[in-house]
Structure formats: C-alpha cells, structure tokens
Image 1 (cartoon, helix red, strand yellow):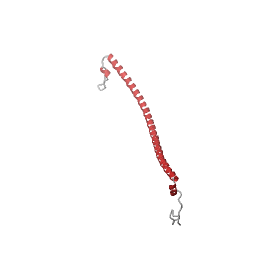
Image 2 (cartoon, one colour):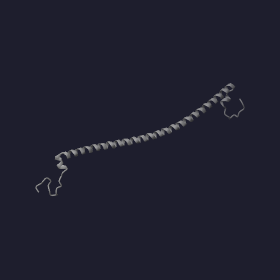
Image 3 (cartoon, helix red, strand yellow):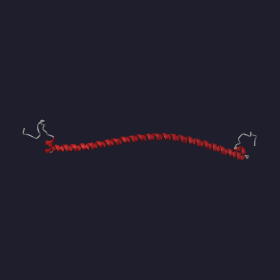
Image 4 (cartoon, helix red, strand yellow):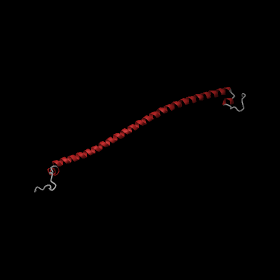
Length: 128
C-alpha cells in the first residue's frame, strides 16, 4: 500500500491488491454511476410526465364539475316543466269543467246569468 495519512479514509480500491480486480471494481463503479445517472434522468422524465398528467386531471375535474352543474340545471328545468305541465293539466281540467258547466242550462242560470239584485231584493223573487 502507498503512504497515507493514518486518519484518511480507505477506499475499497485501496483494499484490493490485484490489478485485474481493481480494474473490475472501477468498471463496476463506472457502470453503477451510469445506471444511477440514467435512473435519475428517467425519474426526472417521470416527474415531468406526472406534472403534465396532474394538470390534465385538474382540467378534467373542472370539466366534470361544469358538466355536473349543467346536469343540475337541466334537472331543475325538467322539474320546472313537469310542475308547469301539472299546473297546465289542472288548468285544462278546470277549463273543461267551466266549459261543461257553461253548456249545462241548469248551471248556466246559476253561474253565468245572474241578475244583479238590489240589496233588499231576494234573488228569484219576482213578486215585487
């Protein structure tokens, strides 16, 4: 071994005495460093893709919220239309009843051709 300071750290290469083994270890270290660099590069690429996908997820979530809001609006309009159609059918029912009552002569006299009576007059009393 070469002359060293006693307190300096000893590397793995210094422990190996055979030159072939040293070269093999240096080659393995270089390969490992290359693999680490490639892994770091791949990791950085994956992080970038993750950021892109997170942005897309946020956009899709915003679109989903917009669609849900539109669906709620359509549901509310459907409910309004169904309420209006219920009222329209009630109105139609009352209109038919009104028209049928108007064509009935007995009810016609009672509902539609009422004579205005004087306050002291009793309706239907013709003797006065």
